[in-house]
Each structure stands twice: as C-alpha cells, then as structure tokens.
Image (cartoon, rainbow, N blue to C red; front, side):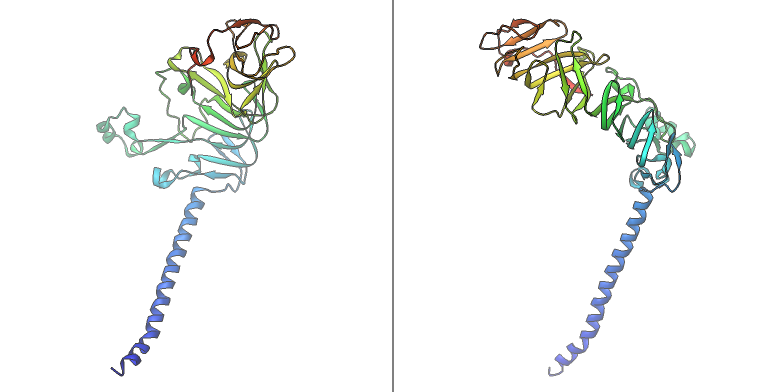
Length: 328
C-alpha cells in the first residue's frame, strides 16, 4: 500500500500524454471537417474568374454563383450551368432591365415525373434519360440595379416573375420543362417594390392616389375567377392619400391592362375643402358607376368633388363583400 501513490504518480505522464493526444485528435478532426466544409462551400458558391455566358446571360468576372446542393440533386448537377442564384459585381442587362442579382428557383424532376409516372417505361430508357434533370422553375426573382419601368410601374429593388402558364385560370396549362442550361423561357411580371412616382387614377380622372416609395404592387386573382385578374398592393402604411381624402382600412384594385382605378373603399381619416367628409365616414367607388361615390355616414353628406353622392343604408360591416381575392 505504501507504493500505491508512487505507482499512481508514475502514470500521470502517460495520462497527460493520452489527454493531449485525444485533444490533438479532436482538433485534427475539426480542422479536417472545416477544410471539407470550406471546399464544399467553394464548390457550391463559386466566383467567376472571367466573363462567362450561362443560361443566355453574359456574366462579368467576379459574379458570385449559388449552385444546387449535391445532397438534393447529386454531385453531377452541381455545376455553373445549373446556377440557382447569381450576384453581379455590376449591372447585367436581362431583357432590357439592369439587374443586381437573379434567383431562378430551379426545379428538379425524376424520369417518372417527366413520363406520367410510368416507372416501367423509365426502366427501359438509357441511363442519361433516367437521371434527375434540372429545369427553370415556375417563379423567378430579380433585384434591379436601378429603378426601371415595368408594365407601366416604376419599380426598384425586388421584382417577382411567374411563368405565364401559372397565371392562367384553373385548370392551368401544363408548365413545360425547360432545361436550366438553356436561356430563360417566358416569364410574366407579377410583383415589384415601387420607386417614387407611381400615381393611379380612375378613367374619368375624378379619383386618384399615389403609392409611396417601397410599397408593393402585385397581381391578384379573385376566387372562382368571378372577375379578371387585377393589381393591388400593400406595405404603404395604415392610410392612403387620395386627391379628395385620406383613407384607412382601404381596399383598392387597378385594371390589369390599363392600370386605371377599378374599385376603392375605406374609412375617411381626413377630408378636404372640396370633399368635407367627417372622419369615420365610409366611402366606396367602382368603375361601373364612375360618377357616383357611395357613402355611409351618421351625418349628412352634401358634396365630394364632382361625384354624385349615394347614401348607403347599412354600415360597411354588413355590406356584402364583392371582392374576395387571393395573391397569385
């Protein structure tokens, strides 16, 4: 027993060496993992060293690409031709628009998806045709390098696009598979963040409003396709200023083609000398009766611009909603 402490002390250097070795092994594993991770990130997010044309887009040197993950599509699909995102060091012109970046929202498809779920048929096809294929997606996101005119709107920053087949009334047409290596298929403007200077009015010019910068305009679809698609928006705050009054709880729509005001409703926050409506007064206008402003108020209403006033008998809560819509 008297030698036990000596024996234990003699083991300390061995234990210390083992602990150091274990720590070194852990550090080496972490170093190897970090190196492998950095190699994988460099492979998935490369930077172009020279001007390159991909999917019909000529990209300058310094463009940062975001490729697909090998864990979702396989390593063979992780290549620049299948880039999903691209961030440009200077503006790149795409379809007449100066872009800062693009996100293609790529899709992948298996053989059976391309052949009406005929698994047996896929077994008979050459190996190349059985591989996962990468396609342009149904949606496309771009970021503008400077404010630009699109579909009559002055847009800035984010612009969202959709394949035209997606926007057709249900049942929508089948969206064709277009290889991600090819130039972009047709895309239709669907939404953007607005720059300054976007003003809209009724066809007769009696009612108008201006959307503030950074509002969003987007295409909307009415349930059951009871009405054609229209434009509406959000992110403009709690109130919206018209030429005759300021409204809260406002709803409005623009004609898809002309961008004329189609309908508007809301509650008065502040009137004007030519439209002295009291706060909390509800107003409603639509293009079917362009000379008429429908009003619900507890006080008499004699005038609002050049409109003929039609008093509503029921408060807005009990008025049947005509416009039930969803974003498409």
